[in-house]
Amino acid sequence: MSTDQEAPASRQQKPRRPTEMPGVLKLWETSPTGLDPRVDLFLSSLAVDSRLLEVDLEGSAAHAAMLGVKGIIPQSSAKALTDALAAMLAEARAGALKPDASAEDVHSFIELELTRRLGDTGKMVHAGRSRNDQVALDMRLYLRQAFNEAKVGVLDVIGSLCDLASANLEAYMPAYTHMRRAQPSTLAFHLLAWCAALERDWGRFDDAAKRADECPLGSAAVAGSGLPLDREAVARALGFARPSRNAMDATADRDACVEYAAAAATLLMHLSRYCEEIILWSSAEFGFMDIGNECSTGSSIMPQKRNPDVAELVRGKTGRVFGSLVSLLTIQKGLPLGYDRDLQEDKAAVFDLRDTLAGVLPAFVALVEALKPKPAAMAAALETGFAEATDLAELLVAKGVPFRDGYAATKAAIAAATGKGIGLAALSDADLAAVSGAFAQAGIKAADLAAYLNPSACVARRNLVGGPAPVRTAEEIARLRHFVEDSSQQ
Ligand code: ARG
Image 1 (cartoon, rainbow, N blue to C red):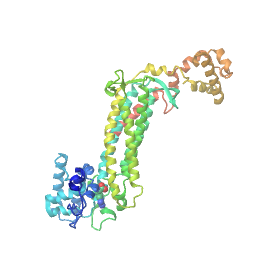
Image 2: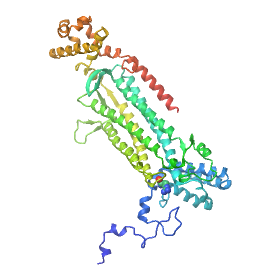
Image 3: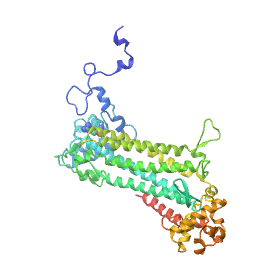
């Protein structure tokens, strides 16, 4: 038996170079040698970047039209190119234009396909541009959609939280610090805290989209072109605010990808925290709310269980999103300017981010819609734990007692109430007098405390801007609804 026959099948099929297999000829290859097939496979980005087919066709059409207008190629050739690109775009939208697997990337495929359809005219399209320009442009066009999608998704989340908040303006519950009961609050206020962060998240996507609003076409790989390109016209045709300001930066820069990832990571960090709260609140230990069956799952073995899988998976996806951000930053940190092939790795991260957001945001809205708060259980958490203690200290301040003395008197009152196993409002005048002279001095009567320290009174008093008083939370919901409405029309 020969050695060859003994070799496993997988080894026998491995491509070999250069003697046994022909090289692979690329768009840029003019020598007959061709590329080692193993290298060809390694370098190809087509499987990933074919998602850029439509945006690349749009960019190519704008470039070709400009070449005609400027007389760099004959008008008739420009017309043939733009017609063919329009036909290819229609085919791409119908799913009928499949990139040929032998092309190195989607940009090469389009030029090769134009040449296949138009002959020599197809070869004119690449005057004054490079694939470096194309990929930079395509990512900006792609991110324009991704930014918009993220912004709409965040607005949907805020809308769903406003609905839940407006139904729970007076659903009293403790506000927590250090995961300990801290002060009386409402569910509406807590949900509006979530919205405050989400509004900033929306702003991060919006700001980043504005910074990304520059057209890299005409960079011509790195140092610009000597051809009389009209960069302003191409930028306008593609809906950009302006052409990019430096050809070298435009082709080497992936800040828009990083900013998209950073905004996504911050958003997911927030959603992950909220999911953690939902998981806690819906546990038997808290019992503040249920998650409807439409958004919870059962166990395959434990018949009694309903699990908060949606919240858990959002929390889990957060790790993946952070990973994309770190990957985009790390890919770039050692790169000299201009373009380096390392940058090809940007796409997998950005595409994964968009897919992840497209899954997470609607699922989170569904989760919010499925929450069924239990106001009695939330209010019961205010019956013990002295969340109203700050209110008593502030009452003393309002009657002229220095805060630190009021704090000490309240702390002593808490110790007395704890000793008796009662709440602050149940202390007698004699109890108050026994713990501190401050109460009598301030004219505070035990009989008045029950009404004063009631959760609804505590919350109603917190009616400063940014506070939980129902009048304030109702105003904030109205403001947020306007924000959602105005921003949806952008
Ligand atoms: N496929 C490449 C990428 O995604 C396109 C640019 C290639 N440019 C080059 N000079 N090799 O980054």
